[in-house]
Length: 163
Length: 163
Image (cartoon, rainbow over all chains, first blue to last red; front, side):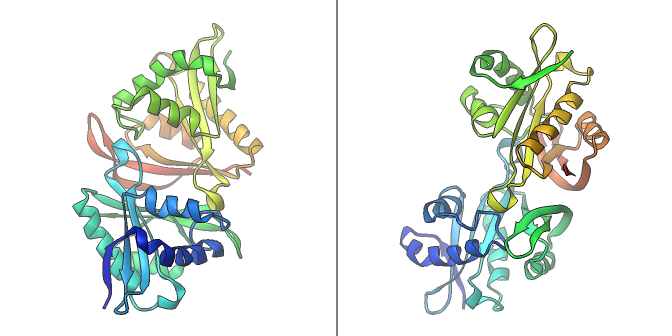
């Protein structure tokens, strides 16, 4: 059983190692792989409109996502989300549960669409999941992501209307 | 003759009415059409890596553009630019001159590509210009822009490799 709830300040000490591990790898998120704890807190907790935590039956964090407007004012009806599942918790459908949850939260917050700006083309499991959940590939940005292991790789823009 | 040079603080009083006029219309930029002077200064001057001013032979401002990384760290080799030509100065090729100038500046700053994230589909003159200057349409985001007169309209993602 996966429970999803809003982020609380006391989650940070457990959450930061999970974010850190993914950011340091430099394979899926554009943040510098040397991003500091403070900057990470800023991009994942402070800047977004909301951040959520997925917990397993032992109340351990098995995922997290944020939601925020993708653009200001006249583009602010489209939201952007970022999702992270720690390596140890992958393959159990947590990403799918979080993405479905995020779409419902997005609608509650008044968003009409969801956009992913930079889905790394080598992140096939994510791309396939987003496709299965109804996201369309708008297009592919050539060499738009500097993968820490592979160098420049393409990135996809993906989009889904929520209403 | 159009001269392009870096923005200076003393330009603001002449520049702000030009930005204001375009932002208030709500037809091309996503900023709230009620954006304040301070916020406008922030998005056009403070946040970008560089801002430029195009002047005519009478030293009047006939255009402006900014350049900034489109993403942090591992996406920061792709830049984003925004261009504005006041209505009275349109049709004289200022946009083209600025876009060519911006590509050279982008290369000097070490950027490898340029991306436009939200080119409003009804802004045909801009789209045609970017296409003529070698930008490709990556894809079209359905209803991603809330046009002040027309309501929800599509927006294009456009991209050009600079090297």
